[in-house]
Length: 396
Ligand code: LMR
Image 1 (cartoon, helix red, strand yellow):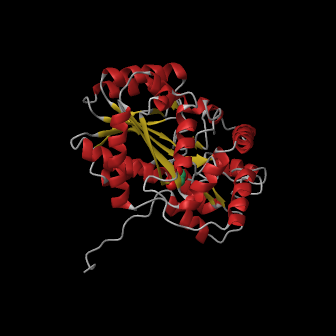
Image 2 (cartoon, protein in one colour; image 1 turned 120 degrees about the vertical axis):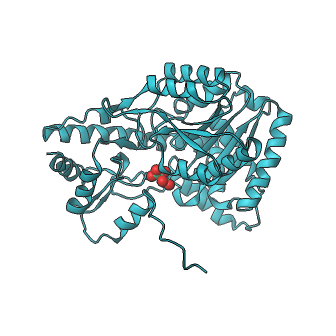
């Protein structure tokens, strides 16, 4: 039966982690996957998460199914974090939010929903984008187009190209936008640029699908949600937000994400939610309890929420310092990588070629994505010197 099944290529990000795990060299460094590691090279368990987890464990709660669209305390807290506590959209009941299996689950459920509602619509994603965006939307039956985004010459944004390409899309096209900490480039739009994009999207009647997986990793939870807030204030009737707590709560394996669909009215949002529930039920029935309870527990307490913001702030500050540390060390080797300071979030599009990335892995046990994306959040004071020296060597 399966004789004709061909070997599928490894995943460009998670497949690389498999190779890293299998590598026996003690000095290995994984700058591939987007995970924040602390100074000791460990994935942190946040204090606020630990506290909620301990109190849940002490209660010994039963594990029934949770609703198809997740824990109400989780979805409510998520809405406030994304749209702001004083959001008029929330006040009007126009946002339908569901807990999903990670941000990837939110993307897939959102894609399946849109395919049902707009069967002919295409989707446009940035060039480049997170490797899995194309895969998820193509698997849901979308034709995927690119819009210009990154300018390799400046290591920054090709804003003129972006505007030109968005301006050419057919009305009704779904446009995938990264709210902050663009994955893979680390190159973001500033407020004035976002305002222009919002106007263009409105004028061209495009459907924004905002992916926010790194909220709080650049400037803070409110500042990093500015794109969502600008779309919310724009008068655009409908848009979609896929969000994730993997990074901001350091809960990668708990698969905690959410899909929020904004409709024109409360009544529309209720109907949309009923359809989202059908999609979820058909995919994986309902989300899991544990991670959602942890997030809801932290965000549901003013005290814990404040302390979580501080823990997230410490991760953010440390990433900024690691960017500085890498740029300075590379400069000491005579290499100019100052642009890494300008990029935001966990990632930097380093400009390294596939051949240079291959040499880093083969000769130095340093793993990066073939496109040259490196995860700055995997650096620390112990590996910075070695990484900088290796990058200097392969760029000689
Ligand atoms: C990444 O881009 O490395 C992360 O979002 C993890 C993943 O699932 O690819």
